[in-house]
Image 1 (cartoon, rainbow, N blue to C red):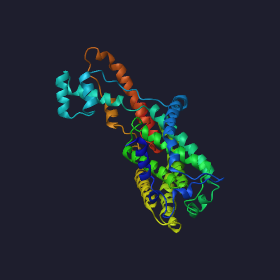
Image 2 (image 1 turned 30 degrees about the horizontal axis):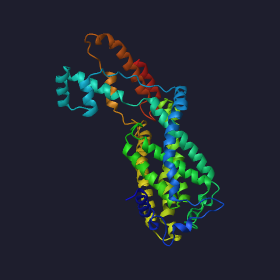
Image 3 (image 1 turned 180 degrees about the vertical axis):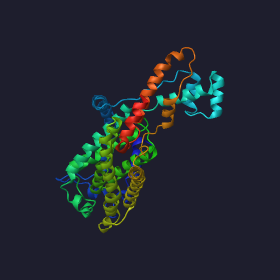
Image 4 (image 1 turned 180 degrees about the horizontal axis):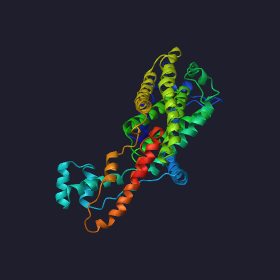
Length: 412
């Protein structure tokens, strides 16, 4: 079978009208030009893949030319970590078996390398800490997402503020699916989809957080949601969905940036604003306005079809993720209101705090040349402890700044 015939069969199966369009509507019915805009077609989405790689390249340039110098201006500092000495057998075990060996494995490795169990445990602790991302890396990632979300939100709001469906959601469906798309909304869609594709492509090298799996599900659901809604000409309601998400995302990323720079007051203020905006937009506006208009109001204008159910399922998946993240945020706010402090950021990086604290408090046994390095290592661990205390949590310093200063003086 020739390649052209295979592509033709795939297109015929994938783009069947009953999947994408309401009953009685054919692709030929919307293949027309209009002076006020264009009618979206699935083939328009092919440009998003090269644009996704362009975003990855742009991010690389942005982080090195803008983000890194900006991090230095804000005073972002990286922890000084003790490097694990090169031991081939331990390195091979770390890379291919486990990063956290069991007690029996520690005993076996100690016999193979002629080291004590304490030395083996210390080596693995130092080796794990070497792989943890630096504050500068995390700051660069947050600043890149902040820049995109801020520009996207401002551009999206500017393009939608004068549209009738921004104020009356019934206008999302009036005349559907023969609704021309303005160039501004076309590029709003294409660039958003390209950006989320770039995030999914680079997720393996980005900083992993505790909600890593939820983030991957979010990116995949968002890509399907944007792609399908464009092909089915759900563009009007789709622009509202993207605007709602962008409205709080740039606030979260800005709070992270100041958190890594230890601008505690600014970080805490931005986080509180983010929490309010997130809870209002994701738990009130999104389900009560957007999901309601797609599930209820749309049925006044067309009969349900496959695309109707598929689109609403994706929206409900996003809503489930909103509830999960709202739970984490509310738990932080609860601790702050009723206990006066928050022990840690509920969406913090996937790092082992135990490793850090153990590394800070440990004392190396002086053996030969290692004894000569103890003074430098103790000095480095003290610096690491100071940094760890300063970065303890998002809201802690609102109520405990005075106690923190006392602890810092004692640590010195």
